Length: 197
Image 1: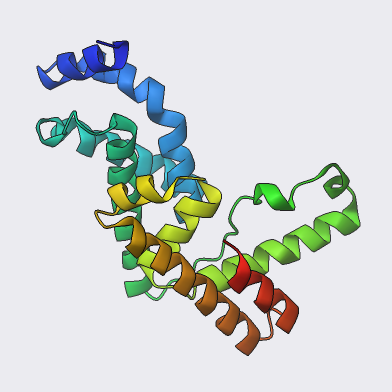
Image 2 (image 1 turned 60 degrees about the horizontal axis):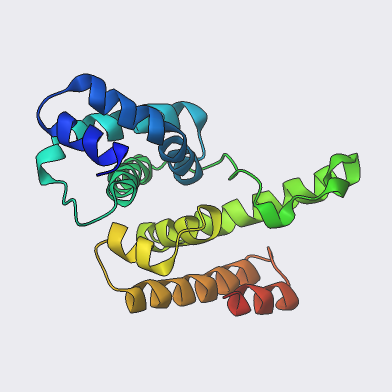
């Protein structure tokens, strides 16, 4: 039995110190996911805290046959989706950019011209993502920013791998169409977006 499983068993028996060890182990990935989905550091901190509270109160529903990390990230993701829906209900826009995607980062990105180009790319990506339905946005963020596998995303979103692949395909196509219609991407950019696997 590994150390994490011992902590889980103890936490399920009410040991708060054991659950504290789980929080320490997963606070960074939980916060990172919340930040990537919410694009706001303060909201991400609150979402991470709420996700851990929800996990603690629902430990009896955790299935040890699945990875704890996937279950924890699923709780975080679902809570963040609720926040995004509330934002939209209040007609608030999602203005803050996503953290730079690793593909956009390079040693040359330190100069002012490169920074302007990177900022423009981030603004374009954010504008496009804000047009996606919540489940498409969640899938895109989990896949391309959080680098989760199709299987992990399917487990988190309680669906099939083929459904995730389908959502990603439709999301890329929708991103390309919306971007082209709004003049945010050119035909070449559009072809790149739809071709991304």
